[in-house]
Amino acid sequence: MHEPTRIQDHDDVQSPSDESLIDLARRSIEASRLRPWSQRLKVCCHDGNVTLSGHLPSFYLKQVLQTIVINLPGVLAVDNGVHVSTSSAPLAPGDHRDVQSP
Image 1 (cartoon, rainbow, N blue to C red):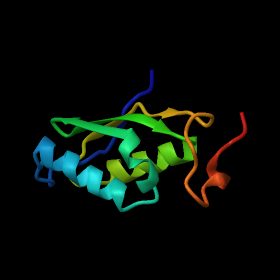
Image 2: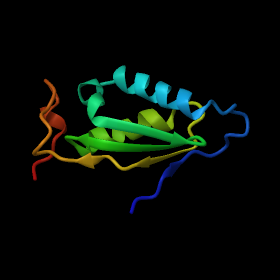
Image 3: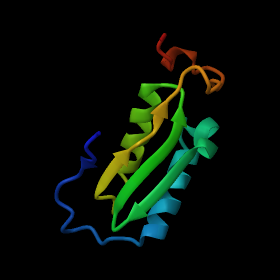
Image 4: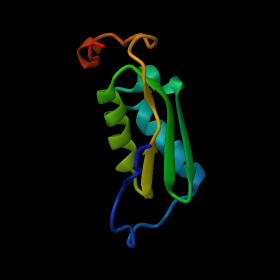
């Protein structure tokens, strides 16, 4: 099992509601290079702890997703449960370089 990624020093950050964090995460994903896969991703949040699930075609994109979400104000931790499935997830144009061969 993987450990959630944690951010230190949130004493000076006012915690937004879980619903607003989910909305912010969704909008940030839509505005990123992950947009072609955004409908395959699920974002949940409880007390600033974000859980990600779904499928992406590469480990690199999984890390991009985690970086986007962990840097959002109010996010305390990210549990990135996204699965990498190179064979079942079609690529977006121009993203063939991100997929590693099995």
